[in-house]
Image 1 (cartoon, rainbow, N blue to C red):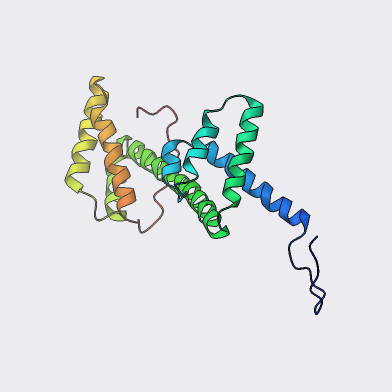
Image 2 (image 1 turned 30 degrees about the vertical axis):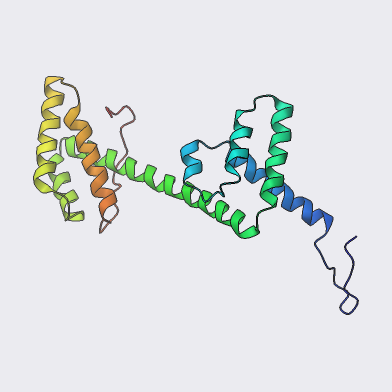
Length: 191
């Protein structure tokens, strides 16, 4: 039983419902951890004693056995202090936000590449160089020229890919003075 403080009348510990909700939250966190790859797990601040339990749970394919192992993993996770669990949750939220930002940067780089290789590529290059003054002007011009030649001669898209990498580096290397996402990306790109 929980018991009450005789002086204040307040409960001394959380209710069973609160304890159950906390346990289910930890179980859900365990399910998310088991669904991750080894590289994703490596980016999270997971204590070393939990990693073998996570790997064991990932290896088990039988539904009942996996459910039992997941419950055992949650039990081991509940032994950790709340700060460790909150650090894992924060890292998972941050990782999701980072992935969204990286995806958006890739789409901007794709849109910029298509704009540079389009009919008004010179104006687009001028805009890119104005927004990103740290960009290597000569390298970008050369890559645009080589990409256009590759397209014209139906050659493999080596410079096309290199242009994408260069634009991605430019976009992630420094912030633009204005938003660089000014067009839709081509769905069937050559990258």
